[in-house]
Structures are given as C-alpha cells and as structure tokens.
Image (cartoon, rainbow, N blue to C red; front, side, top):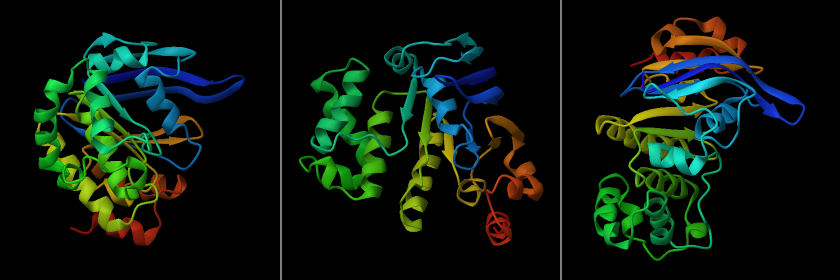
Length: 247
C-alpha cells in the first residue's frame, strides 16, 4: 500500500471530527474520499499531511509510520497536499507560485526551466502567463496552478481537497483528464470530493465518510452498485447515479 490510515481519531479542541477511521490506498491508484460537508474529509487529509495530529491511531506511508510528521517533512517524503480553496498566493505571479513548489523540495531556480516544461505538458495556459498575478487567474486556472505547484515537489502521493469547488463542469472535466495523466506518470492520487458523480467513473477505490466515521470502503464499482450508501450520504441522487453508471 502507498498509504494506510489505521484507526485514526482526530479533532480540534474538544470537538471530535474523525472516529476510528481506517483506509488503504493502493500504489498507483486514484482513490476518492467522498462524503457530505462536515463529514471529516478535510481533517483526514490534514492528518495525513501532518498539519493535524491524531488523538489515536497511526498513518503509514510506503510502510513507514509518519504519524504526526511535520508538513514540511511530509513534502520531502513525497506527499503533496492541494488544500481546499487551492491555497495559491494571490499577490505572487504564476512563476513565483510554482517556485514555491521547488523550494519546498529544496530545489533552486536552476530547476525552473525543467519545471516549466513539465507544467506545460499538463497546463499550457500557465506557461503562457508566467508573470500574471495568481489572484487574477480564473478559479479553474488557480486550481491548475495549485496542482502544478504540488507536482513540482515530485510527490509519490498527491492529495487534492475538493477539486470541483466553485468550478464549471467543463473545467472540472479538464482537471480530471489531467489527473489521469498524472496517475499514468506513476503518482498515486487521493481525491476528496463531495459529488460522487464527478469522480467514481475514474477512481479505482472509494471511501465514504459520514459524521466522522467510515461508512464504506471498496472499489468504485462496488460503491456504484450500492445506491443506498450514495443516497444515505447525500452524495448523489437518482439522476447523478445514472450519470456515473453511463459509459
């Protein structure tokens, strides 16, 4: 397994958010973490990335325990986290935002040429606007920038929180196509999403969180075949489920 979360409980202050959650993400897969707002999806990513320390349980990355590892060390180990809301630096240019990815991996300006070439393959619009302020990009372009910055840390695990948030469907489809290319390059992806219909058709495995507990773990097809879980977690109505299952 690329990633194993074992019986993790976590929260903030006196508030409990995750309760005894366990997931396994196979190497080279696209895994999706689904659930309604407030289910604990973001908190679970933060536990994996090291920005939230669990109250109990442990996290294994490539069979090595990383529970409570500082976020900057997690990056160097090969974990990239694209947070909800994208997290770009709006007052910095596209190039400067990308350089932050290089610096996180302790690579300097000399690696920028190679980095821009790799970004161009996935998101050519970013390479065409290196001096544009990130805050003036569209929402979809900011998401592309956040993903590209994460990729410049050369991760083996890429975690993306709420890929589709606030984006038009056509933009989301472009991003999902890019994720398939990223997977093909050997990167394992853990994708948090609220809307099942967007990701189940491309994901290998799926997990559903409800009220901080794991409600489902299995293949995406098994989840598609289990409409009671989808409907119970407010992930998809009848029409959405048809969209998932239609080739």
